[in-house]
Length: 83
Image 1 (cartoon, rainbow, N blue to C red):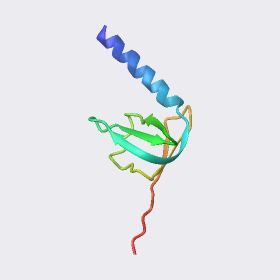
Image 2 (image 1 turned 60 degrees about the vertical axis):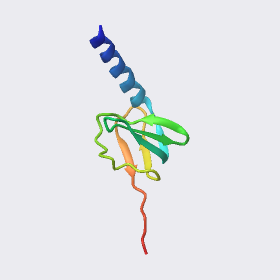
Image 3 (image 1 turned 135 degrees about the vertical axis):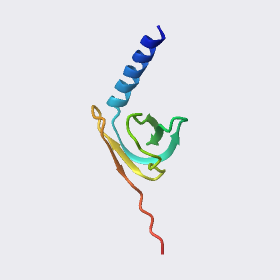
Image 4 (image 1 turned 180 degrees about the vertical axis):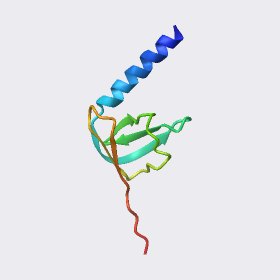
């Protein structure tokens, strides 16, 4: 029974993540205990796919884009100039 629930939950979450469509600046980024990120774009929280290895490279202020139906993320890093 537990195995079937795990499979159902994984497929449901994958479908939810697959349908996400967003483009904007990350205002908040959190990592869970397994290092999977959840980001806030335009006031909405998005769980970023666990299969992606972001390696803590996503920071607040970066631009993140994802088209619905695709597992591809486009990350544009915020540049900081130092004088």
